[in-house]
Image (cartoon, rainbow, N blue to C red):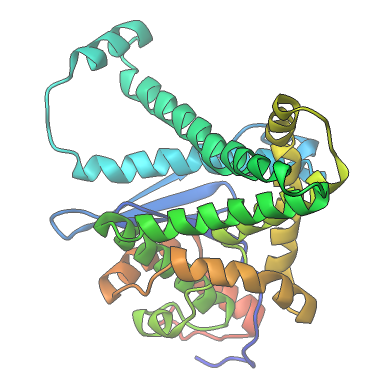
Length: 322
């Protein structure tokens, strides 16, 4: 095997950490690899097209980000539930489960999962959107400058997010989830840096990546501050509703920024990505080799990295290596 010089490239694959595992997605195909309690690695491969599949709207800048965010949320919930199923204790259905099964025609688990997802979204809106505004609202008696109040609101929002990430990392299960998050990033960085996907090479790769969802959240926080500078209304209720209604627009802009960061490598893009890397110090941890093995299994199920290295970096493979 031989290769040309090593440099960074865009592979197009992305992923997500799940309970004791990693999900990797390449175009419409995704794989979830989970380390089962027995120690065996289970790998499930499926296709996910998402809403508006094939629609031209998914090619329109700023609009596509809204639907990609929704699709990521739906798929992310699905794969998390799948990974959790390996660690659920067998127990009888509760009365609530039986009622939901009866009403939904045997789809009680899906209905319950949807309800939990909606509650989670509502809590996220309350904690990260409404609460920071209400907190900054108390400063109006001391500060009359509306722009300064918006900056304070943004600062409170960022502080709450950082405190949340730091606090949940103290939980053993979340710490391990962050380790698998690091394993996911390391695999992608390994490939995009032109290295063979081996445990040794992955362990030496960076756990920080420009296209990370954590960086996306950072862009959401910053874009929301800028956007609220230019779109203002009077009244507490109107301001809260405005912040909620503008979130799809914020997500669309943030998607374009993270897409830009993932495709280019220059001073401006690196500067744009640097705060996201600081956030990732909280949401990614160094994995062990067993975690990396799981992440590699997920990559192998949906992505031909040998072909990628051959086409992008000029690798040549012996027949017994291919």
